[in-house]
Image (cartoon, rainbow, N blue to C red):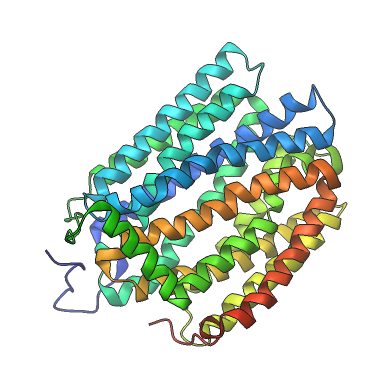
Length: 417
């Protein structure tokens, strides 16, 4: 079975000519919009319910618990999910996981209809959602390289990121606006988008089952871990993302900033959520049109450093517009570092190991996102949302300097080809 899509014989390959990839991209986009809208609505609901029974710091801690609930399944399932993606049909795995996400938002819709009074059901749903994401991430990441010619892979990764970032703009804005009307409407829209995303994935006709490598399940898992550990560019890139975003998780506390610091409503909360994606989209579109070719490592470290500075500015801001500008810069800087990391990892990883390496990368990213939300909630419990955000921004800057010294091969990485 070919590992890459065949090249057109009469002209250079273009992404728009790769029908399986177009279906994949549309599915990724719609699923991203649904997921971001759902996440925005959950965060607002949790904060407003918790705020009725406690102060701002206690409600911020409740937000952090959402991240912990989603992270725990990732810890226990990601390596198994990666090995599964290297053994079985990646399209099928992704489609089933997307249907599972549709089930979780259906439960949230039912809870909202009945009247949400307690937070524990949301935490339970968040754990199930984390299980679905644990399998969706490795399968989806490993699927894309099978659908395009190898020379189109850097551009495909940029467009993959663009799909996610456009979703991160539209999703939170839609979630915030619809939540202001009714959380039930927001959850209903997410449900429809999940189902459509699953249908598009199932419509891909290109072969999506990898060549299965010999060995037991545990042997394959160990091979994936050993590859990540021994390849210092891969390990340095994904661990940099882990610790920088783990500390700089400003977006987890956006409901607290929107409700109690900036004093804006749910629509303003949606604007704050969309600002991060807006900056990321600009950078993603630029990279899709003009991919990086040289000094990749330097660009990655600069992106993380700017991410840390923007986090500090956001934490200290008392203006909605300055906060949105800081979040836009933060999102663009994060997009740059993510683009370099994903391209480096995909290019140096053999197809037979992409599922397992994507799983390890997903575990690190899950830790930086979901566990980062928990860290932000705990820090906000003691330092307040402002103190926690500023602390995280400076922490991201320290990590950037430390990793630049610890991983010289990553710093010196040059060509993305």
